[in-house]
Amino acid sequence: MQQWPPVISSILDEYSGRPLPLTRSNDCNIELARALRKSSTPAALFPNARNAQAAYSALLLLLGYWEESHDLIDEDQTPEGCYLHAIVHRVEPNPANSAYWLRQVGQHPLFPEVRLNAQEILKKDPVPGWQLKPDWDPYLFNSWCEEARRSPKSEKEKVASKIQRAEWDLLFPWCASPRNSG
Image 1 (cartoon, rainbow, N blue to C red):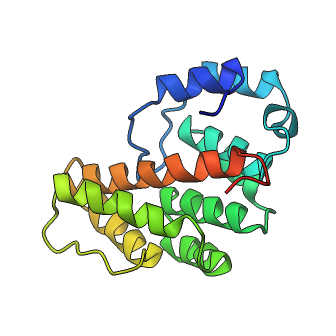
Image 2 (cartoon, helix red, strand yellow; image 1 turned 120 degrees about the vertical axis):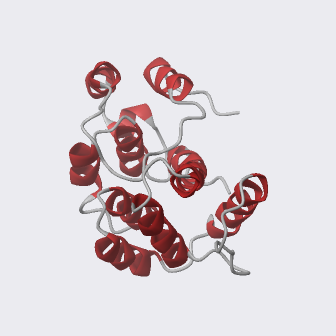
């Protein structure tokens, strides 16, 4: 189990189990974001991380700081940076820009696990018409998010938010983990 600095632990504890909203809002956790920003740099918070900047940006997105998250990840051309950038634009919402960044990602090593998590969520909360493909299809998921946004507070929105959070729950520790870990 990963040991996090106190500010990161408090963010992860407070946001444990909360879905990641499908659309950015003005609902930001200013206290935790300020604590995160004052605590240290991405590299100091995530020493030897696969992608400290992407991990830091992911935390800002979780806290509702879309602009700051985007600004931090904007120039990151790594697979992890591009993947997070795609999620940030999905939340914006800007599905075309999200698709652009997904094309930069290609096939990410997390996709099989994202698909498994999505399958479990859909097994518990099935959505008529939402059928997974044999491999994770992030473009299909983007279209589900767009469909869900057209039905605020619906079951579709709840399920899409859960899947998006499950995706975040895989990507954040992947970025924050040491470079040599699997």
